[in-house]
Image (cartoon, rainbow, N blue to C red):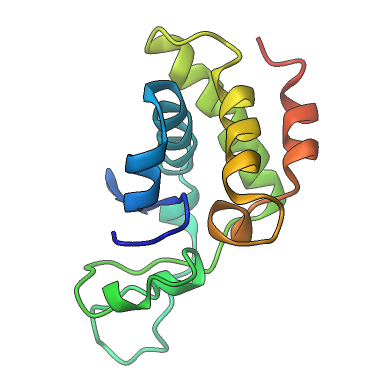
Length: 148
């Protein structure tokens, strides 16, 4: 997806939206960290249990701009319904499960924390991109301290 913000989102059923900025700026570990977090949302059932948006109009449209600001141009071409975001607990759970996914893939335990720090450097804390729908990064890093 052509977006200047470093970002990604899970559409469920193994489908993911990834911004061009993420692909252009991330190294292998950083990309793996972001995708592990999004895969964790799908794996933990967050996407499936979320209430679809759409107001019953019957149109098969994604309201992607809610979770990836600036992505409204994709709305007519995306194929499934997405919610405006996950709860704080779901975000923390996705971080923890993302660490497990990364470890199983052979990445070091600290990959997720390093990814969060990198995301802060890329996007700052201005609420854009990845941070528009996630809890404060410092809180997320602190929550991962005990995860091994």
